[in-house]
Image (cartoon, rainbow, N blue to C red; front, side, top):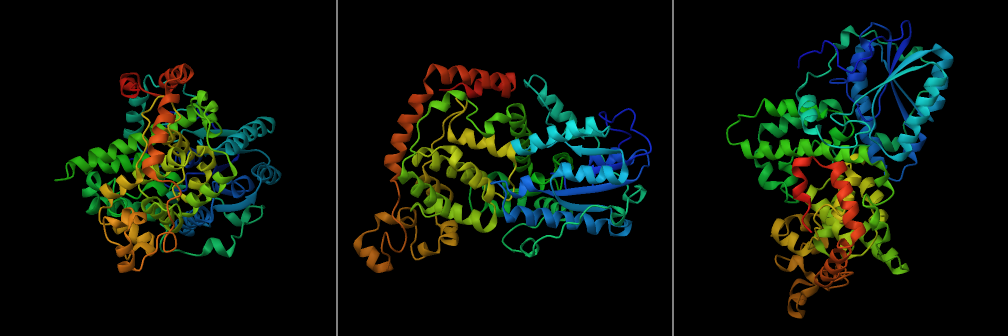
Length: 509
């Protein structure tokens, strides 16, 4: 990749004679890293800093799977910098406390980081950091997160901006040229991870920049050729999809790097359909994060505020039903297979994620907010900016998108017809063949005896019958969609979050 002369958003004049601290967050890499690139420009000493923050360790979306991935990513950076006096400092606690310790040691310093399109807790922390820096004469410069524009209120020229950003030169530095600070010179506590963070599990993708690039090369070597045909299939997608999502979510590789690498393969014979579908997903990635950036209040409320009045089941029984969904014991084979697969691997394909949300909200009649952090905790590639807009869209509470009520039986019959995925993750159903495996509660007494299968004991009975819950959900959600306040809010959402030329796609219903 070509080296930049200087990014457009580089500050005209850095404060001289100060240490430059690069604060790593969801950008755990050393290449195409604008904060590092800018911090290196004037030759001042550079320190890489990562803080295992209390607010994140306590966050309900975070799981040990995420911390293992983060730790693997940090160790990858450390290994790459082993020849440069270990300039990565990892500490823990409250970030403002860390800033005070750095100020005590260095006096004034310069702080560089990437804008984080995170949760309310990290946004609150960033506001506090901004106030602290201003009060203590600390220069803090943030660079954009991909093509996401902070504070954007409309999409008038957003597509052009995305193209320009994705095609611009990557912000790469020659590691040997950086004036690195030795970590040993930094007087802040060193973080020692718990043993549980060091354990490796073969069923989870490992973190790190090197692993991200291996996955990208492997995708284009052969397996990605079937991308467009396999993207909806729960088993085939595990091989044919790029599997880059956790590396993008935690910043082991940038979207721009992936996009530009894809363009170098654009004329690869027999790949055009796969590449068109893949590039559309790269654009989609920033599109949804931009939605969250433009209206981050959707973390705690429906983006369409009229849905504050939508009534879900909040009875004591709903807690039991919610637990069955969370543990993969609903009695619906594909739903349970997807949830158990997530528990053990952190990954399922997009269509199955949408089905899980639809089943929770539409079939089980449970408020989306009661399941959103649970799935975030299971997704190894948890990205707040994608997670919340997508969750609400699949829950049908935007008032602007088509309400899609997934039939989990039909999804299984269409995308896992032989039950290969179901048998893999719901072993108690391996004795059944298709089509019985998709509706085991319908097994006849003779078949039950033949397979030594007892509905309700060998495998749970459905907590709701999909054919009944589908009809009820359809009537309930579409009738609410016709309300004037829902329609009015829908118009506001379209104006704020969509490109003008595409708004006609969302107006149906």
